[in-house]
Length: 498
Image 1 (cartoon, helix red, strand yellow):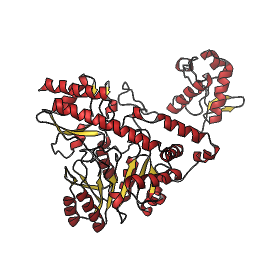
Image 2 (cartoon, rainbow, N blue to C red):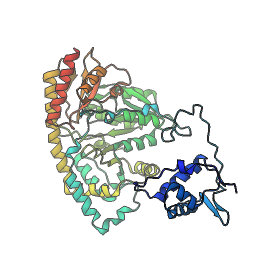
Image 3 (cartoon, one colour):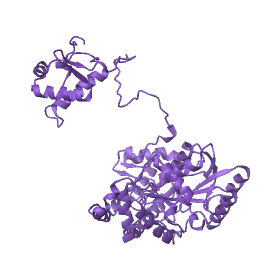
Image 4 (cartoon, rainbow, N blue to C red):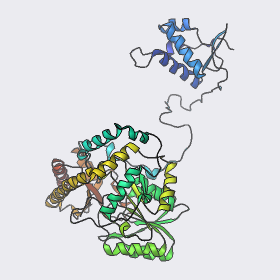
């Protein structure tokens, strides 16, 4: 063993007697840090407990407790008649000399290893911006969430011993009671013809898109999307090693004629569509194109990933039934969820497909997320059975329709000289195109000065450089006063930059 190290313990150890963490653990933390950094090398002799307690002005028992803890963790060892030493079996650490020793480096910010960085996934969300009013791209108003219904059902479940089994591992397909409730709910509201074997519970629609892409797109397989599309879905397809081919989107939805032309030249693995309210433009896929797309899928044996993210919010007439309701050959993977109905934080979605697809998706899900929140899933099952979800959906649909009408009415009344748009038949956002020569960067910068923030990633709506100059402006999460503020702010901005 070595002789005592000449290390200034007294000046380097700083203990906070007002901290909630015990002094002996603070002492442990700092000594471990000295050992890890190489300042205290293996076999270094440590001061005796009496000496260290005097230097640090703490009780000797505190030092003894710290040494006992460090011994139990294997950091130090006590040699009879010799003293206490840093464990001789620890590896010798030689800290790297920095090229610029005056430049601080923190392991909290910079890793010590290489890893793959995905620049295409870097998004500056609106949540990072400081503003008194933030205008999203179409999400529900969390202030309307049925908190009391959720709390009541959750509390009833957790109070019953019968449901204690929900606290252990469950089926990777998801809570059976929720799957059973969804069979009735989706067959009734969407015209589906499914059983519990056709449902996988997910943590929102995005997990469903990810699972579908991993099942379908490996080895550079082709997926067709619109040339304006939900960009997170596009990023997911690229990460799954797929190749995206794009077709145009008009007032009738995605062009199935162009899809047919691609099918004649290429083997297609999948087509991704948001049939009810296309993302981002909000247009609805026409009945003619729906049937054409289903026929193409059956003729060419490709999958249709139908992302029905806001089916429940259609205002002009009854919602149009999804493609999945007419799927007789098992070509459609139908994805939806409850984040748009209830609140974004309620991460429960569903993945509907033929049983063999569901079983394989459940196997894949196991390695990325063993299972969902079983208690929350059971709670949602009860809310569906009790009619809580349906009542809430009917309630907020009326509120969102009123907000859409107010937003579009004011936009048309005050800003028609600057913006082009169509009042959407449903959904939570308006596709707004800024007229030339105005620029969204200027508009958003000026609006931010007035404490109103818009989505800073507006360019991702036009990754293909179509020049449509459009963005989604959400109205659902804005109450009447907030909508008036947004429109008045835009009016002030546009008149100032005219």
